[in-house]
Length: 286
Image (cartoon, rainbow, N blue to C red; front, side, top):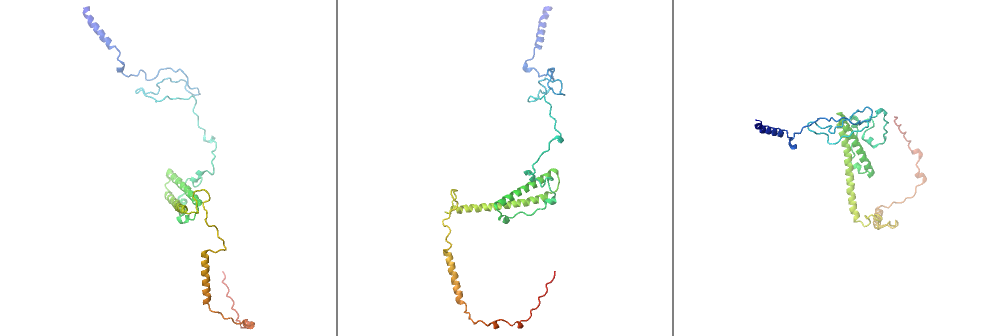
């Protein structure tokens, strides 16, 4: 009986041993043995007053217990406390330059935008005919005056949009239109002068008296000042024509008879025969 049971007991033992054999590593389920670290604190990290006494030495701090994910880089902490901001009353006063260029972006130093009534007080733009008489320096100054004015207009428009004021846009656009008209006229005049300069260069290239190489004098006249006592051919022709006209006029004039001078008694009038003059009327008083 015992011998008959031994094979079955042996087979049962083999089955039990096979069931207790550990599963190979590729087929072992991913299970987490501990969600949090149980390592005791070994070192006091922070030294400043009010810091915590212990420190967690877990290398997996910040990882997810389910997905095993955490920070992608190692976090660092400092032993020094964070600085506290200085109150505004203790800060030193800020000194500004009264002549700084940024002040030109505002109408004055107390307002960022002017009232619509003040913005509407402007004149017309400069015309091309008026700017043709201006020098290069005057056009240069006027151009940058227009640039500053457009900066002021743009700054005021941005402030009105920022604070949602809801007024002054129409007056600002009309003012900007006049400024842009002046700048357009300036560019028109400068374009005309550039075309005139190009034409002058073409004429100078064919002129033997002009040297455009930059070496030596730019203008060398071939004929110098003439003697003022020697008349030119044109002046001689004009003088001859004047003489001919004078002679013809003298021939056509009638001879004047010369009479004897009258005596003093005949030439001088009798004072008694002169009628008395009428008194002048009095001028009207204002």
